[in-house]
Image 1 (cartoon, helix red, strand yellow):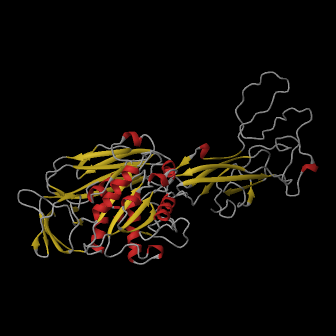
Image 2 (image 1 turned 180 degrees about the vertical axis):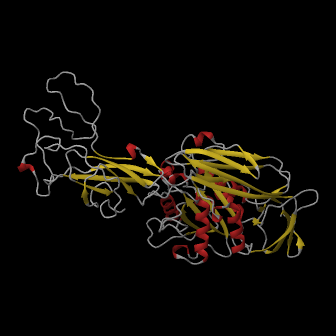
Image 3 (image 1 turned 120 degrees about the vertical axis):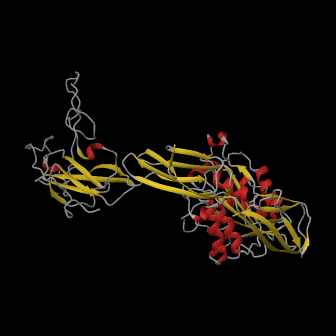
Length: 542
C-alpha cells in the first residue's frame, strides 16, 4: 500500500473549516508532553468526567447530576466510505476528524499507524488499496503545530472483488445413455457480500435457480451434447460464471480387459483424512472409531498410509503421506509389523491435531498420492506396488470442494486404469455426510458428500456415516470391501447387460464361469480368482 503523502493519493484538498486556539479540548500541561510529541493527560481534580472522549462513542458526564440533552455523537479519528463495512472498490474515501486543530495527518494501511508519512492536514481524501477479498485496516494519526500527537485511530473495511463461488457437486461424469434422467446439483454462495442474483441457462432455455444448493433434473434425455451454464452476481456487483457439459448417447463400444492374476494377496490401502476445522468433533475420537480395521485385514499382505484432504499444505497436503505417529522418517505401515504396534500407530496417525485447509479435496489428495508414489517422491515412494490391489478410504464431513480434472470420480478411475495397464483392481470407500441423511446434515455433517458417494458407487465401495459415534461396523465393512478388491477385476467403464449384451470372462482362453456380480465398475467374484490370464469382454455406452 502506498502511503498518502508519498503516492499522492490524498485528493480533494479542502481548507480546514474551523480553528480553536486550544485544539478544541482541555488544556494540556507542558510537562505532560512526552519527547515523542505524544500526549499524556491526567484526570481533572474532583473525580468527575472531564468531558473529553477517551473512546469512540463515549459521552461526558453532567456535573450537576441532572439529565443531559441528547446531542449527536461526535466523530473522532477517521471514517471509511461514510462508515460502510463492505465495498467492491479498492478506491476508499476517507474523512478525517481530528480531536484537536490538526496541522498534519498521517495515514497508514494497517492498524498501527506505522507506515504512513506526515502530510498537511485535510478534511478528506482517497486511498487506493492493492488488497482485495479481505478485511483492510486503515489507521490515521494527527499532529498540531506545537507537536502534540493524537492517538492512533483505526477503521477497517472489507474489499470484495470476487464473484460468487459456484461449485458443481453432482453431474454426469461419463456419457449418459439415451432415455435416462440427468440430475445436476450445484451450490452458489458468496462471503461476505451475499448473492444478489443467479441465472441458469440450458442451451437456449432458462432454468430456475437461486443462491444456495440447487438440484435440476432433466428427464428422459435424447442423444446429444448438452451444457448447463450458471451465472451469478453478488451484492456489490461482482460476477462469476461456470458451466458443466455432458453427452447423451445411445451408441455402444466393445471393450476387453486383459488381466494377469497372481495368487498374491497384496493390497495397498490409503486413508484420506479430513483435517479441516469442521471435523473437530469427529477428530476427537478418530483413533477409537477405527480401532478394529486391522483385525479384519489380518492375513493379507497389506501396506497402509495416510494423507489429508488439505490440497496446499507443504508437508501434510497435496497427496503427501503423513509421517507415522512416533516413527520419525516412516510413512508406510506394513503387515510385517507387530500387531499391537501397527494398531496403535495407525490410530494415532489417523487422529489429526492440526487444522488444515477448509477446501477439502479428498479425491484430488488420493490422485496426487498415487502420482507421487509413481514418481518415487518423498515419503510416497514405494507405497503403490505394481502387483497389489488398491483401496482408498476417505473420512470427511464435507464434499469435494473443487471441480478440476483430478477432482472428478471418473477421471480418478481412468487414471488408475491407465497408470497400471488395467491390471489393478481398486475400490474407493467413503465415510461421509451421506446425501439425504438430514439428521447428520443438521448435526455434525457440514455438507453432503455427493462426489464421494459417486466414486464409491463407481468402484463398489462402502458408503458410511461420518456422524456415527462409533465407526466399528462401518470400518469392518470397509475392511471386508478391501478383501473383496482381491477378488475383483476393475473394468474401464460401466458395462451394459441386456438381451443383446453380456459380460464374457475367459481364463487362459477358456470360458470361466465363476459366480460373480457387478459392483460399480468392479466385477466381483465369490471366490479368489485362480492364477492365470483373464480376458473380460463387455459393452459400454460410448
